[in-house]
Image 1 (spheres, rainbow over the protein chains, first blue to last red):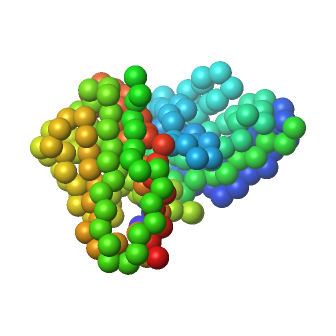
Image 2: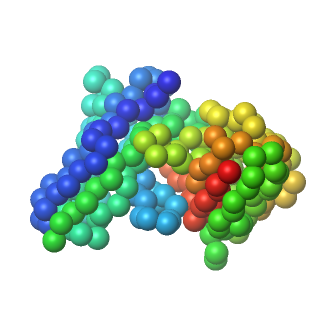
Length: 112
Length: 114
């Protein structure tokens, strides 16, 4: 049972374009929604996170949009760069000991 | 600070063999986690610990055991390895308090079971 569904599985974007990755969740008890970035051969690292009391959070070129009623959230990468090429994971937590439920991951490739 | 370190980085086992993966963190974190990463499935929680001497099951605990005898170390054991346990294993730790419970991940261990 996949409680967090992520799409697309892979994404190719030109340099300077906008990358958009979507996630949907089922458990209404989730109250923390982070995005992790993973480069090949490395462990995931926290990129940006949001709580459901706000609809949007922006940090530099990265923005999370959150729709509580639809149980969906998305990551937008503005002015995408080749250095952004990585695998991105959305996740969700209900606050119970910080346990994370991850989406399936999106492999982002940004062409120069 | 080294952050979260994992030993070994790579390992090949034969079916039925046993092994222990070691995770160490130097951030004085209370919480530690073991995940496995498989293509198309994201990361799935195997076991976790919320403090020294405590452990609990995650989403996919079968075939694994863990121990947290010291706060800085979290061990993952495979008693009798199976090909289905071929995966990349990640350890993570977090402070355990505050509004933003960021998890810090190690570099991973790539395990192949033949």
